Structures are given as structure tokens and as C-alpha cells.
Length: 376
Ligand code: KG4
Ligand code: ZN
View 1 (cartoon, protein in one colour):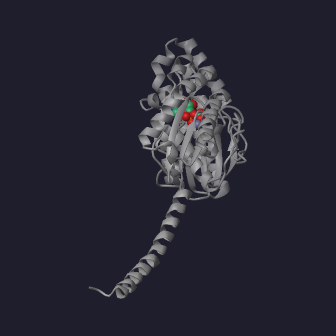
View 2: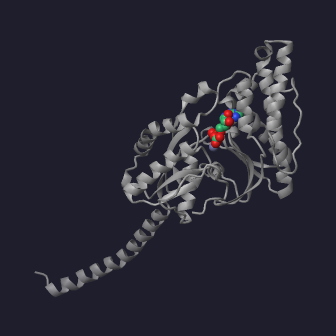
């Protein structure tokens, strides 16, 4: 039989050794858990216009991006705000539910709920903001407000390659046309923007004048591929510095169609592809002209595009060509991250979470929210 005291001593040594090692293991586990807390799981909701979308981001990686588009607006030739908010009400629960299920995320895995606070349509924003508040209240989670336009810019951080700061971002959508100087994830400055309509609106309105359904931008893009961009010329609107204006081209296009139809009633049908190609080239040139000026003024050659119109193939090709000519490093998001989506809201929310920027349950939508307007 073994001497019990000897056995105890050796066991104590082993135990002591184990405890010693375990302290490091515990420290390691604490560090890991702190890192996981710093890299949170967030549910993000986007409802600013006519897409109801939700996305889950975990440890900085977007897990999914569920979007319900609202076909109800097509026959009206544009987004009808009242119909948009009703459709959001019908869609939002299904979209959020699908997102959570497809990401394999349970309510208690979430660290925060994020939502688009603005800019956008009041009735549409209200649905997303209220739903996010309800979830945050029920699950006792912090809320993160996201600026929709800042999120369009931060869509560039969803996938590789990612731009380096500072970079310029041409943000072009149905409601905005801006050149943004991006200094950091949460530090952006608008250095140029439209004084009237957005370029997306010019695409959509021109399409409507030609009898094409809403949204006209993607259709003009498609038809332009079969057309000659040099057939029709439109007059240039001269704007100072980095300002844009698209109301002039809208009116010029209206008169152009009216005059041509006086000569030939079937003018649009006969020349549709060439008209689309010529108009698209004109609009893209207007954008590129100011973007080149912005790059020249700031000395920045790291250039990104974002927003729905960033899906335009004419703009994407022109960017690639200019990059070669002027030695730009360009960043063009995947198609799914150009038009409205919650993945970009999730990405913005991730950086806001890391910066400890949360908002209260008394937060309300801001339909005309500008870049840099969010206080929390
Ligand atoms: O970013 P977005 O989805 O919604 C807003 O925040 O406005 O942008 C929608 C706009 C619409 O005007 C739509 O016609 C335009 O983006 N758009 C395009 C293309 N795809 C979407 N415009 C031109 N070419 C496209 N391929
Ligand atoms: Zn948008």
C-alpha cells in the first residue's frame, strides 16, 4: 500500500500545476469573451424607401441580406409613400424572421438592434424604427441608429477589397447625388452635391417620359447596352465647383422628346436603344466630370461609388476607364450592395457598436437626415 502522505504531496503538486495553467487558460478565455463582446452580433433593419430589408452581422461579417422589394409601385411610375409604408408593415415581420432563421441566430444571441433613422420617407422609416424599438425593448438590447447615406458608403467594408482612408465616394441614388470625403468609418464630409434633383431621379423621370415602368434606371441601363451613345447630344448644365444639377437635363429631355415626336410619332419606339445610350452617357459624364475635379482638388486617388445608380454599367465602365487614365484605385460594390439593403446598415451599425454609439428608445425618424447628423 502506498504511503498516503506521499500520494497527497504529489497530487497537490499536480493540482497546483493544473491551477497554474488554468489561470492562463482562464485569462485567455476572458480575453476571447471580451473580444467576442467587442465584435457583436447585430440585427439591422432598413425601411427608408421601398425595400424592406434585414441583415445579421456577427463579428464584423455580414451573415445575410434579406430584401423584400415592393412591386406595388411599378404601375404608378414611382414610389407612392402611403403604399410603401403599408407594404413595409406587411413585410417587416417576415423579413426579420427569415433573416434570423437563415443566419441561424436566436434572439438571445443578439447584442444590439440597428435601424435606418433617415434620410427617407417618413411613413417608411417609421415602420423600421418602431419595429427596431419594439425588439430592443422586448429583448432588453441597445439600439443603434444608422444614417442611410453613410451606410451606402460603408457598404464598401462588407467585402474585400476595402478602401483606405481617406477616400472619396460618389454616392448616387434616387434621392441623393453627393461626393463624400470619407476620413474614417464614422467621419464623413459632403464636399459636393446636387442643388436640385438626384441623378437616379433623372434616370427614373426620363424613363417615365419614354413610357418605361419604374424604376427606370435599370431599364435604361439594359436598353443602352444595345444602343449607340453618340447619336443624340444634350446640352450641358454648368454648375460651380463640386455642385451638380439634374433638373435642367430633365427639362431638356422632355423638350427633346416633344420636338422629335412632332416630326415622327414613333420616334421613341424607333430609337429607344440609342436614346437610352445617349442619355446614360450624358448623365455619367456629368458625374465623372465632378468626381475628377474632386480628386484633383483633394489629391485623393482612392475613389468609390455607392448607391442604386452605382449599379449602372455605363458608370462602372467609365470608372474603370478613368481609373486607368488617372491612376485611380477604384471601389465598386457588388450589385446587391448598391441598391437599398440592410447589409450596409449592419456594417455601419458594427462600427457604431465598437465606438459605443447607441441611441435611446425616444429616438424618432429624420426624413432629411444629412451625413454627420447622427448624434449617437
Ligand atoms: O439607393 P437606391 O436603391 O434607393 C435610394 O436610396 O434612392 O437607389 C435607387 C435608384 C433609382 O433611381 C434607380 O432607378 C437607380 O437607383 N438605379 C439605377 C440602376 N439600378 C438602380 N440607375 C441606373 N442604372 C442602374 N443599373
Ligand atoms: Zn439608398
